[in-house]
Length: 249
Image 1 (cartoon, rainbow, N blue to C red):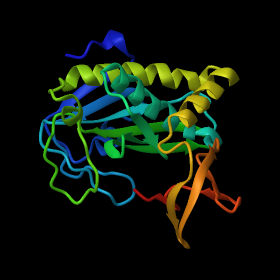
Image 2 (cartoon, rainbow, N blue to C red; image 1 turned 90 degrees about the vertical axis):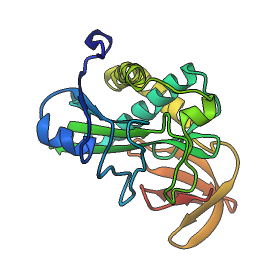
Image 3 (cartoon, rainbow, N blue to C red; image 1 turned 90 degrees about the horizontal axis):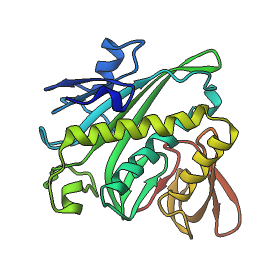
Image 4 (cartoon, one colour; image 1 turned 60 degrees about the vertical axis):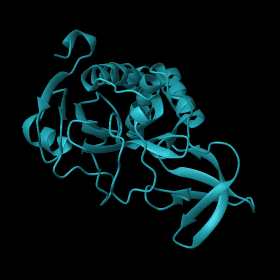
């Protein structure tokens, strides 16, 4: 069993469910808790994407939180905190060359190790509830979907990783990083600085595609709202919301 003293979340394990995000939304309203499963029958990525996962091989889980006083305009701080928590844990387990592909995919070199889906509910100008769903490739070594670049911890490290202890470590890291959101201006600025420095292809010009076609640009910043700021080779600043621009791999 997960030791509840190592983080503040009640943890529930399911053999199978449609999606862990959906399960929390239906069964755990008002609780700060986490649910993980061996298999999802309708696991989702962002938008219309699906997440491939072999039964009992990977870590599929969701966490529900109720951040106190977090303004809706600053809700992207949750995404920054969670993605950095993944880097904290995976780095401690001996994986280098990690980065965050905007907005919050976890990459090892040029390959996708983890996907994160965050669904926030607002009450007035504040975030009332946030469900953070994640699919981390842990012990799977064969991927059969048309996803272009998956990779797992086992492929990187050459050994299996126990999933339950990994979940405990991640929940503890989440708790630590999420506390920075309410820790004052200096703490929030540190969160933003750490996030920017960890972005995939943070340095130099790289290929992107938007509704008007392909171009090369460099990352300037990510706004508090989550908008990505790029500067193209002509010196023009470009500002994008989620799904409005893609990095060409």
